[in-house]
Image (cartoon, rainbow, N blue to C red; front, side):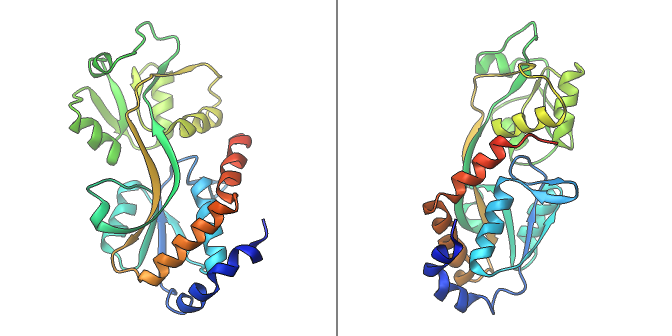
Length: 249
């Protein structure tokens, strides 16, 4: 990709924002394959997209990885804060300024392929003995709002979900997008066909970059324009393809 071509349409925005955008911070959470630490280095599909955006806008904001709730709290309470990757829900819509979408994905429940009771319907899912999900965040809140009363919210990290399922400590897990399930299965050496996707789409939405409400409109606009330049150049698709081809460590 020739960044000189991509930056042509951004020059005016960069000049007008570069001196104003010195004190922003970026936060994100550990959520593969979009944003995660690998050998103490931040990686992931949306991490690479955010870095590509800043290469175009001339920004060099520090990125900090925080637990999910702390990252959201920073976005809500600290000035000039940016967070990725975030689902853009109706409740969140008025709280932030948005850039995106950056990627789109869906979340399904998973069980062991060898499970004696295969789940196919929502009614079966809601009556399963135990469903393990993350201890906090959008997903457990969504499941509770849908009427699930069989939730185990003991997992604080994504890897715990898979270890609990493999060990027989839970029947079903709901926590990651399908791409995330593929990533963690490779990372934890879970053999192919060990896990079975339950054909019920729990949630489908696009992931966005969220800016705190005090962020300058010029900065938000520069990021939005940079993202569109990357999309039109095919760079977003190339980044996603690159992660699809690289096995997890």
